[in-house]
Length: 293
Image (cartoon, rainbow, N blue to C red; front, side, top):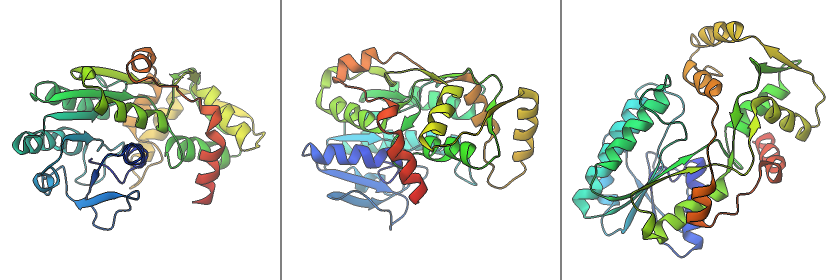
């Protein structure tokens, strides 16, 4: 498993180990913390270092590596496209035929977002790889340790004197629980009939951005008013943020926010027998864990 030490990787590792799988987790850092009973190996998908050794004697690859923001040499092109190419080449060379690949809901070659364009290009590499592949396209993923609900939205409610809402706030989202994502990956490995298929992983309920902010505000016990920020002002702010070394929101993230992120969960529910837990069942623990960090 690539990205085993990430937020989603932790959930997927625990699901696979709980089902009796022997999991080898690949991480760039030798001191990366992995769930119990996961064999840790060091490697880098962007260079291919360590991939051959990691794939020796395994039955399937779960490719989770991805970034939401570019930093230094870790660009969307290197991580999403070249990283996926290196994983496919190493799997092919090692005789591994099964690949479950994490893409993203909204991936498209015509997207204005570099994140979504490179995710789409990685999908193209997977489709022509000759492997028995399954592509997963999750929406916003929530769970303990996530960066969106426990990070971005929580900070928007906590820090400013009012809660800023981007534009109209009417952009639709269908967030999915990390535990359901992990179950989908596990069952994709168990059910060979899903090879050659693409699945949207979305939650049971659709919300607007404004509704998500209201949920977080309520869970935090805040009564701050929500104030809509006109898009021209937001664009100006995002451009200024781009001058910072670690901006709170990038132009790429802003474009994805305006596009929304929603899909039809029914095919994945049918294929993997998902129960789909709603955001309200876990939001409290997500925010509490984020406060304790």
